[in-house]
Amino acid sequence: MGDAGTVTKMTIGTLSRRTGVPVKALREYEDLGLIYTIGRSPGNYRLFDDDALWCVAVVGTLRQLGLTLAEIQQLAGTYMQGSKDPIGPALARVLRVVRARSRDRIAELQHLLMRIDDFEATHHDELSGAADFRATDPHHQIGA
Image 1 (cartoon, one colour):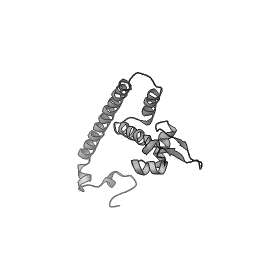
Image 2 (cartoon, rainbow, N blue to C red):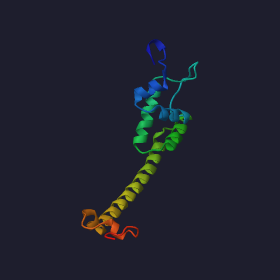
Image 3 (cartoon, rainbow, N blue to C red):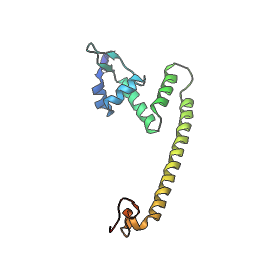
Image 4 (cartoon, helix red, strand yellow):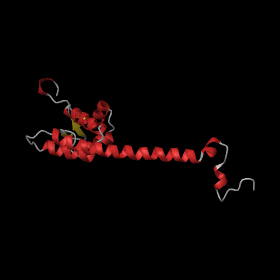
């Protein structure tokens, strides 16, 4: 808010410049109900005040922690219901899900690294240039 109770209005472009978040993402955040808005201008431009900066920062933090937009939207819905219950326990539950999902992804990547190691061991000669992958290609006869 500005001085003397005046509201600082900004367009989505200004919000984008101030937050570094692309306009397309901000539109999606607003459509999902993740950003406080103050309505639209007479020219039908989306309008925001400084409170939107806080919303974008919270969404950014949650995204950096690995939450999906759907998970953030669900938390925002719970938060916006005006319940007297703190949002922390709900966020803690989601973080446990994100942690498990991240561990699964790490395991997948570890398996990928093992497949790369196996491939490199099996194809050492080809990778070093001592042999040629084309030797096994039925359409490419070396020396033919």
